[in-house]
Length: 308
Ligand code: UTP
Image 1 (cartoon, rainbow, N blue to C red):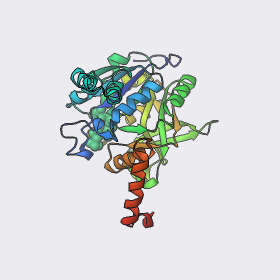
Image 2 (image 1 turned 30 degrees about the horizontal axis):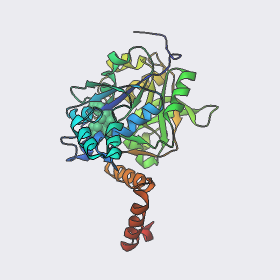
Image 3 (image 1 turned 120 degrees about the vertical axis):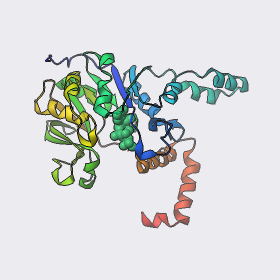
Image 4 (image 1 turned 135 degrees about the vertical axis):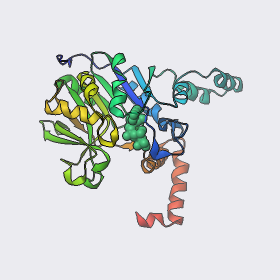
């Protein structure tokens, strides 16, 4: 099926895939989605919902998996808990409990079988319809002080087609990501994507630009995803569908990339998860001073500071 690119339509909807198995984080993710693991005192996905809301996207669709209950409950009211805190007069904690209810209108759709990120995004087709939309991976945390999504939405509105977020990584790490072949543009932070490959061997990687978990997509991607066969790891890869849009093999391009240089954590990776917690805890006004003092003592006592 062909269609004209509706790039002048504003982006109003966000899709948050959170149906992955989270095998890198077992056993913690046996009965809990990895997106619900706390980063200091908030589940990872709440940071992502806050980011989408801050970019003006008030309509969000969460793609859930087998353990969807905790996700739905977190963004819903909890009358018993709220009542208990009211009775105690604990306004501060009451505000924390209520914070996640009013962020956005959240919808949920279940991805019966976790057949890959491309398949998860395709589950959003009936909700999204024929307009460009944002995708924010529920386990990928972008520091709110380093805005990325609004810049991507601006580029999408100006250029049409789709926009991916890219980050330069060590060549030895590129096999962990989707990788983009790129051409420069007049804007230093924007590139034209000419090809994409999922988790390439470093020797075959066309660049060290890694695709990270933010996308602004043309709805033409749904038609391409319907035809996309399982790729790397036996999963239906979003990267494979975007490759066809980037090369012009399918209608709905172009694909641009916004190069991100800010702070980002893959909270589905144990090492990055720990770094996110330590860094965000150090920077928190309430916890930071005491935590930093302890961390400094710990580093000195264990000889860690000498290794830095
Ligand atoms: P990952 O590549 O991190 O895969 O997914 P995963 O299966 O969740 O985790 P590991 O590798 O086994 O530890 C990236 C994002 O895509 C979502 C995940 O929830 C995560 O937000 N996803 C992935 C889906 O929603 N459905 C899928 O079928 C696969």
